[in-house]
Length: 266
Image 1: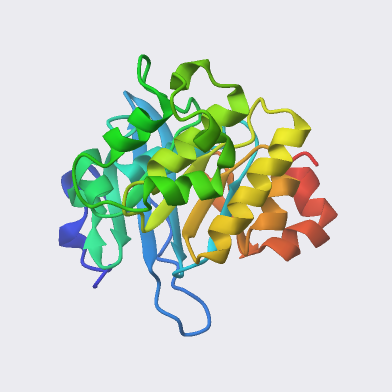
Image 2 (image 1 turned 60 degrees about the horizontal axis):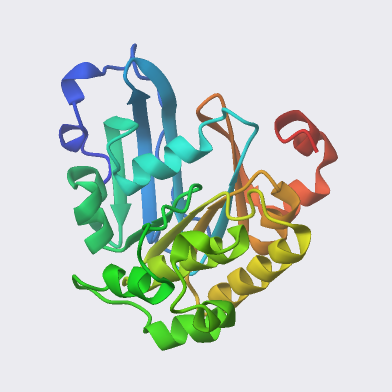
């Protein structure tokens, strides 16, 4: 994988050094090769310039907390990585397991191991819990078995015949995560998994994510509850105004009150 060839960049003619300063590639630390890398990605909602030259990499099995204040570009970065239609990725490279996601559609990125759990969960109306899970496995590659997902989320097993959209918020979050794991996921992207949930349910989701972590699932978690995300994560990347302002260990952020106050307001 050669990430430095400028001729492979998206929409190269739209950018030059004056118009797209960006940052250089961030290579993995400790001599271990990156499993996932994004380099100098720029993404737009229409003419609104949201993701402004973000670069970082992730080693296999690593959990990364992608943090920042509201409007920092966290969700937009996840969506650009997952290759959804918006925001539009106009420049940069995204690689997963040596495959160029920046050359793929969202469907192709999913087939190649990207698993996005969106903030709004997107449970399919009219389908039961089990039907939502089975639908995720209609096309290969398949991931976890439905019974294994029920072992992870016993509540889903108890409600397998209940319509998915009638579940509680926490149960819908479990279903959204389970549905993603039903695919063969190499990189799990979690967008605000604790959003709107009662503290007791947050603790349950946290235990579930710890279980997923124990299986070595490479994960990026975007979460306003930064402390909870930092306790789960190995590394933290902080965004501000669509750019990376910090990339280090999660413990460094927990120990640095000034950093937390400036960029996370905690």
